[in-house]
Length: 225
Ligand SMILES: Cc1cc2nc3c(=O)[nH]c(=O)nc-3n(C[C@H](O)[C@H](O)[C@H](O)COP(=O)(O)O)c2cc1C
Image (cartoon, rainbow, N blue to C red; front, side, top):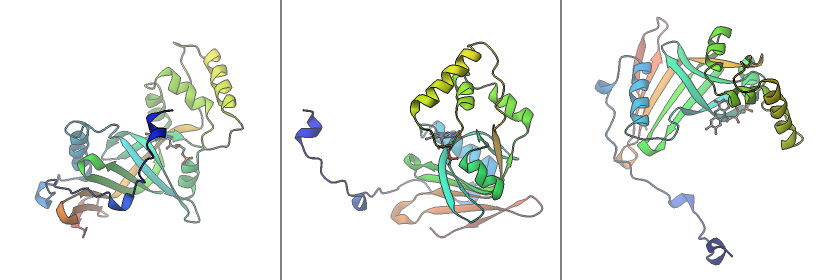
């Protein structure tokens, strides 16, 4: 018998879970000239002061041609003025959605800092050279994993996946170069709007959103919390 069995756990009621945010605010005058610069500042703070586990983890939401949404976590691997880049399987559900409907939302949930950043924009595949350059930086095991998985398709058993990996590991032993799988690569999300959300006291949060103008410059608007 474990301690867990001895004491019945009290029901966990999410309606009474309430944090009081006392974080410093975000003013228009604090903002960087571009959302990518502002993102870089907050990303650095999330990784250093916030000591967040995987601050590059983001929730990617897509919708299919009929508008049915789906979300999942992926890792941000690069960002600059051209966009936010992640890597995945081009046969996956998210990639199929993006082929039908390139509009996408990326959400960075930095809860310990009472912050979130939401990027909305349009996703395009990265070029073959860029994909290959990133693929070569991945650990050998992850390279084989990318080959072994036909992401989002149904598997009969776990053993099927392990057998596929073992076969690949025999074909490409450690030290041998693994080619880039043809159905694997990146998406670059060019931002159309980026919202920076900072939790404040009494639910009077700050929400500042950069919105792209057609000439490539940005205007900033404050949204009601
Ligand atoms: C922390 C974390 C990081 C992840 N990173 C990635 C990633 O970078 N690329 C990816 O394809 N899947 C990643 N996944 C798995 C996805 O959440 C998802 O299961 C997978 O991409 C299939 O999604 P789909 O069937 O909706 O296309 C990650 C999951 C977690 C929890």
